[in-house]
Image 1: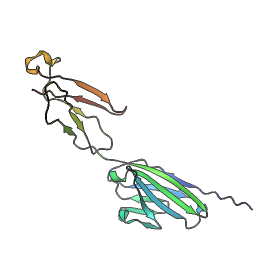
Image 2 (image 1 turned 135 degrees about the vertical axis):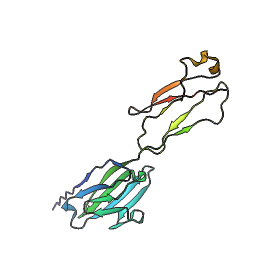
Image 3 (image 1 turned 180 degrees about the horizontal axis):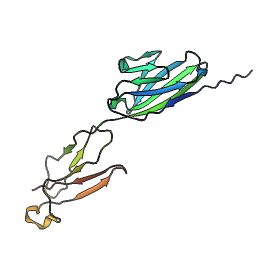
Image 4 (image 1 turned 30 degrees about the horizontal axis):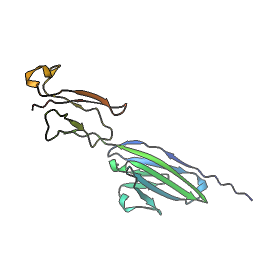
Length: 187
């Protein structure tokens, strides 16, 4: 006698959600798993650490009050940046097993950019001024500009004798172009 068992698990993929909003992670399964299948939810964060969210029919202490588990899914009341990562839904029962992964990215709005200026500069050396946003999930274009305009060739003027002025335009990827206009320094 040959017994063929077919079980099916489906997930609805939620990939990008906004900071502090709620989200449902859906994990539907067929009746082939039986009337009372074992369901587990695990989370792997962006650093690779893995945690149980729902295990042995109970929400783990770290997620108590933050999530609700219902038939066919898991609901977060509010998500934060720390909730970005991979969520595994595992269903087993009636000798069947299946596991699906839902990748969740939580979008965090950008904050005020932080600039970094070297504390000292040596005559004749290059100076790198940087500007970045450490909080936002997607980094919008940042433009750094002087408050006063510079001549086309500043080295032709006595007030700008000891400086080099460069404008660098570069792209980290095709989505965002950052322009930095380097401020001159009198030495």
